[in-house]
Length: 513
Image (tube, rainbow, N blue to C red; front, side, top):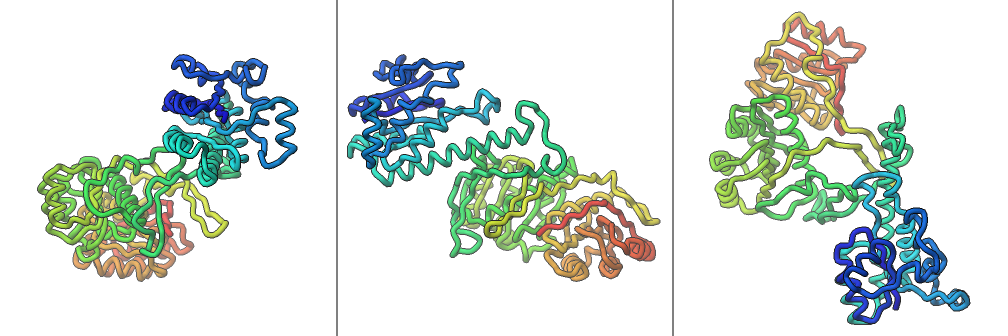
């Protein structure tokens, strides 16, 4: 057998090479790989010894030669291929060990690998006869199989070929993204191409198989962009059963919302309780315990089986409050004190306790149905409170502005049509996912109850008629924020003036489906 080694990441290289040599396998190595083997005293041939041609162009050309690629690509089941090898005195290569330049570490033309992908793809194409190793994580199992059976089996070569093509696909995707960002000229495209390029090359690698999908009969998993380290990778699960698809989906929504609330209200502590990606309660407080108590009081019934997101450290006092309340499926926080973990586990062993870093900003949103995908950039709240426009005779107080901010933040992250009512920094009524905005308002006011009086309300899109607004004012709401933009805006503004309430326009809609 003959093996070709050409790797950037030299983790485990010497051990693999020594193991192959001990099994009587001849080694060929190129460039830095040959240097590492030479330094370790592992016998090998340099690529130039095989090709009869020195490396050139500063190392850009070394393995791109018929004596290398014919040795990899020869189909041993075809006599004419074997005749060609014999005619040109070329020895077949049975194993290729190659990983690529780390392009994403410092994107540049010089880190665009040419010879590596060519060798990897050649070996993967000819996987009926050739094995290909593209990761140090594969070395031990491959070496053991060769030592045990004398070769790599059909199933192993098939699996390795798939991993090899995934490896080169991810690599090419990184280069495309770099070129979309301007590449060597450093200038991003203009217009829509600046946000949504003509093609998308998503290479997703599976990180975790979750407990089940959206329903128990579905299989689910968490993937990430190949080569990336999203904040979920740094999440630590301290207790509880395995996470399901919806645990991750809802926890992500809760964690992002609680950070948005905290960012908009410095000096306050923030807690959000989420059910099916919508808030049942969200609150600002003087302490985390205060914020949790307020968020829970907004809708304790819906909080059962929900996600509790806490933007801070969970101590014993807060843990006791949570443990005394409705069962939570997931509690996600910045950190947990040991006593808090013990108290929460004693309450319910199945509750997942997750500590997490702050979430990174969302990128492109991709939704697929069959072979079609809808893609858009993230829905950010771009218009700050200071730029909202008051269109009524009554002007907002400082407290009303804070309540309007809380209502607006929560509303923007609630399934449309959505109405959210907030009072004293607490989202006390959430009407979500309704076909009618009036019905969403009725649900929100019903949940808020007596707390609707003197409260602030937000609508994720404009009021098409005054009836939705009137549903809120009839229950005592005294300030409202909405995007505006309806042909009947003036009719709605007039209704607000008649009710002697505050109305703010943001000029920014936040549908969520």
